[in-house]
Length: 285
Image (tube, rainbow, N blue to C red; front, side):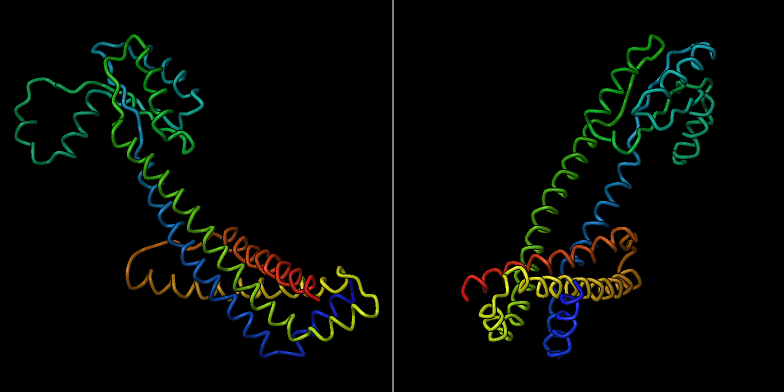
C-alpha cells in the first residue's frame, strides 16, 4: 500500500502542470453538475414549501358536543399520516374569515348569526402529502358521524404530484447525463497521464508486474483527482450560489451532507473514469 501511495505522489510530482490541468478539468465538469444539483435542490425545496399547505378540512355538523370532538381529536391524531389536527370552533372560523377577507367587512358586520361551521384542520406528515394518502385520510374523516363535509383541494394536489414526478424524472435523466459526461472527461484526463507513462508501464509488464499492481496507482490517482476536483467544484458552486442569492433570487445551498456527498461523488467518478481508461490501455499493451 505504501508503494501505491508513493507512486501516486510521484505521479503528481512528475507532471504538476498536467495534474493541475486534470484537477481543473474535473472541477469544471463537476461544477456544471453542481449547478444542476443546486437547481434541483431549490426546485425540491419550492415543491416542499407548496406541499406544506396540503391539509384536509373536515367541517362539523351543528351542535356536536365538545366531548365528542375531543375524543375524535385523539383518534385522528393517532393516524400514521397525521402531523397535527386542530379544532377550529365556529367563532374562530368567523374571526379567521374577518381577518383574511377584509373586502367583505361590511357583510360580516351585518350578520345576525354565524354562518360558518366548526372544523377539524388536519395537516399531514411530509411522506404522506400526495393525492392517494390525502384521499385516504379524507375518506376516514368522512366516516365520522358528526362530520358534514370534507374538503382537501384534490385537483391541485394531483397537479402537485405530477409536478413532483416530472421534476424527479427530469432530475434523474439530466443528472445521469451529467454524470456520464463527467466520467468521460475524467477518464480522458487520466488517460493522458497513462499515455505519458506508457513506456514505464510496458517496462513494468516486461519485468513481471501484474495488471493489478500497475493499475492501483492510477486508480488512486483518479480517486484523489476526483476528490480534489469535487472540492474545487464545491467552492465554485458556493461562489455561484452566493452571487445568485445576492443579485437574482433567494435560494438555498447544499446541506453539509449533500456537500460531502458531492465530493465523494467526485472521488467515485474519478475512480471509475480511471478504471475505464487504465483497463482499456492495459488491454492494448
